[in-house]
Amino acid sequence: MRILFVAAEVAPLVKTGGLADVAGALPQALRQAGHDVRVVLPRYRTLRENGVPAVGPIAATFLPIEERAEELRVWRATERETPTYFLDIPAAFEREAIYGESDDHRRFILFCRGVMAFMQHLREVDKWQPDVVHSHDWHSALVPNYIKTNYAYTFGHIATVFTIHNLAYQGQVTPNTLTLAGLSGGGLIEDGLGNGVAGTFNFMARGIAFSDEVSTVSPTYAAEIMTAEYGERLNGLLLRRRNRVSGILNGIDTTVLDPATDPNIVAHYSAEDPSAKARCKEELQRELRLPVAPSAPLLGIVSRLVEQKGLDLLDRIIPWLVGKTDAQLAVLGSGHRTLQAVFRQHARAHPDRVAVRFGFDAALAQRIYSGSDAFLMPSRFEPCGLGQMIALRYGSVPIVRATGGLSDTVHEGLHGNGFRFHPHDARHFAETIERALRVYRDPKSWALVRERGMREDNSWAHAAQQYVQLYQRAVASIGRA
Image (cartoon, rainbow, N blue to C red; front, side, top):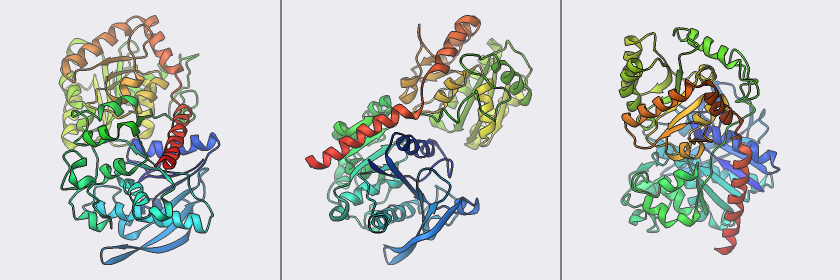
């Protein structure tokens, strides 16, 4: 199949979250399975400043928006196995930020319009046309909208798939954005199909409404977002489209994320011979200035410091953890300053038990995965989660809240690979850690739990097969329409 990926970020070129990991790894897995995949993303200033190799411009045009026409130039990456294209729109992306600008709605309208112009270039110059356009999150949600409306005559025969990575971020703005986007209302979203978003322009809702198939990044999250608790006011729309909504669990790049070869860790090990993990723990304790104590359980957490990640629960249980257990805690993250202040205070109060590092440090993250005995993810909600899969791979037993992809990947019991709790409160979180520490005190039982996790296959190969089936359903639905 010929598949065009449309995303706002693609690892390792530009990354702020899990979306980039998917957009970077899934196309490669699909290509390895024999499919013809191409990727398109914005050419942010950071890509140019970082010297990402590219040739161009290979095409140029102007994108009309309101009373203006903004320049578009297309570049092609030169050192990527998957053909990758950058849309250079100076009015939108010649700035420091990736997201968070006051005119994000205008920036990504231009991006989506640029994708339509780019698709015309591919058809006319490269003689290449996708069977499926796969868009990701709200930044590219207008692409299926345009394909089914403004560009229906040109591209209406192309199937569309839209993936929700996190429903909480929707691109919800004022109704006059409809005119800015050059779209007609059609009574579809603005008349209330978005279940509470009537009177607004909602990028995410339009992606859901106009795509042939919609996916989320785990089966449990696909079910959760159809409820009022997790649906972020779009559960009504999702329920109406439930026959076209699927949950496909993300994977991880097991060739890069491999404790047997990872260059970021001090010693290499595997499920067959995990003995060197003890040295990784010792060196991590030393690096974080914690007492080198082989028998003390070392708990790790690598996370964005935001409310979603349930770090308020961790804040509340640290006094218990320090007072009632001998566990050490290693925290790495970036985000809200208030949460940084909270964990900095804990580290100052208990320097021999709690170590914190702030910022994005990919190498240190790998050392925490390899050096910790257990990995904490007390998330309020978690569409998929990659941290628990990486932790399993590195033999750090996950302790998670049973939500979203955490429910799909972490199992407790006779054949379990970790520990989990459901009610989102500090008591249940502490009880689950206590339960895990009891098992930790039995080295043979702990080794069995750890080994089961390390032997699991969480690679992209299985997910790629499921996406191909989804693409086939999307293509078939065009014929039925």
